[in-house]
Image (cartoon, rainbow, N blue to C red):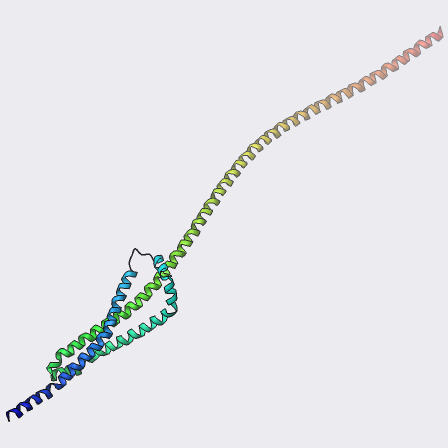
Length: 268
């Protein structure tokens, strides 16, 4: 009788705690399975943090990163990069939604009701809630840093291209400034040459003006001399005319005298 009563008590005790043991066993199996999954996600998160920190190192320039991204291995992986990127986004989104579901599952009213019914499940429920929240943070930050890393790589390439373009533009600007300075120097030399030529032309014009004034004075003097000569010629003409008239008169008188003498001789 004692043995049978003990067996009944043990069986009743086992029946009472069998759901608890089954729940704990299933929870441990799920925990082991999820631990492998979320451990990989955690290592992926740590790798993302390390890569983002390396990409943000200040003394490594964007041009250096661009040269690193131009390695042959990255060119070989380029066709698969977009597929890998979107695949990881889908995986992380699925894990994030699963973590959200787990958080809602273990923070709802039903688990708390089970805890009130069976207080032994309190630690198990809170452990699962804690792990669900941890998985939520891990998946969320992994997704966020994955997008941040993609954007960082894109911005580094764009900055490197901008730096190269700015270097080319700087070289063009320097050459343009040099050409403009050369043209300015040429313009200054031409301006100086024009000023010198203008001064020479002004001096030459001054000399020509003086020469023209001298020539004008000479012309005026010549005109005066011509007028004087013309007046002298006119005077000489008048004098010659007077002499001719006087000569004619004297010739007439001479003829008359000869006629008178010849008449006197005839009378004798």
